[in-house]
Length: 253
Image (cartoon, helix red, strand yellow):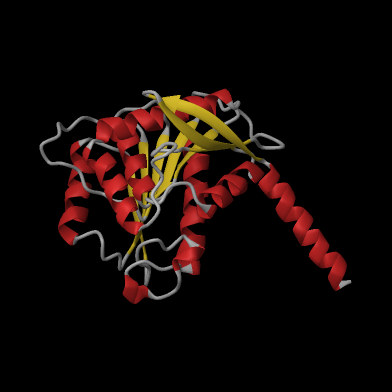
């Protein structure tokens, strides 16, 4: 019986991963390598979710998220922000690559736009798109809103909230969800306050939800469980934030 149960689990895991399809595309002559997840049974209206990965690039967490979304009836696409030949090999390079796009936000927005087009090509309805991201990808989700990309909503999970104060303040039409660790050491009270002021000044429809005992990367099972390191997985916060995201999707889409 145990042998059959184990075999069933392997088959289910294989089927889930089999939904992901590698997609080569480009932006500004840079070759990019993303992944599309096509639902076996799409939700009404064929809504799509663009996934922006954390600072090290496309990882298991992003792929697992694409699987979960496609199993829930959503078209999903994982964006490649850095491009072939420019993937970080360690945390130092990841910090440098992510820092570049945070500073050069117009280029970040351009990479997100290119991925949005691939999501639409895969079958998603261009009128029903949401962008979500983790950490550095959460920053990108907010940039999609700030850049007035054609999306209904954006969701940031333990993402960077910072924004150059010299940038012009413009209304944000996309709905915004921010899922934030209450003990995240990488976002100062001043930066959080500035972000909330930005949301008010831009007349955004926004939500910011805090999760107790959660630090940075609280949704990623590979982040460990030591909060003292500043980044750690928190199962309760991960579960709650996903449920809040599902509610957000139903409202927006």
